Image (tube, rainbow, N blue to C red):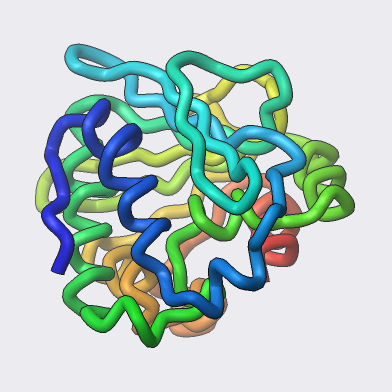
Length: 206
């Protein structure tokens, strides 16, 4: 199992490229010489946070500080929610999928999927009319993770769509045990606002 750092800078600049490089040869063969049609921007707001832009360049992950001009999708979360959501989520995924040599791109976290999409799907993502926020109940706290298409300003406090769920169910989704649609069907996820936004995002990442 990979060692996953708690610090946002180390996670994005060291762990993510290393984790991508560890994927099986079949994945790298499929992505050989491919470059992303835009950057995935990861933003951690607050003390110890920062902004990083990830992209695929010639089949390899490249990470640069700051927000790139050609934003495809932004992932935003408060600094206090970084470890509970992203780090613990990555650890849960690693625990559920320990053999990297048997993993396909389809089984990866959204970050890797976003880097591998084509120009047509990138166009569809940028055209999605608004942002969504996962509001995740974690004990007595509600933790937030925002997904914002294109370069519009993230809106963690007032998104066009808010998706509510328990941390245990969110973790099952992260680890691949369950699909988001299953959680909606089981009424374990509640959607408030423009339902077209999460539906559109799920469509371009399948």
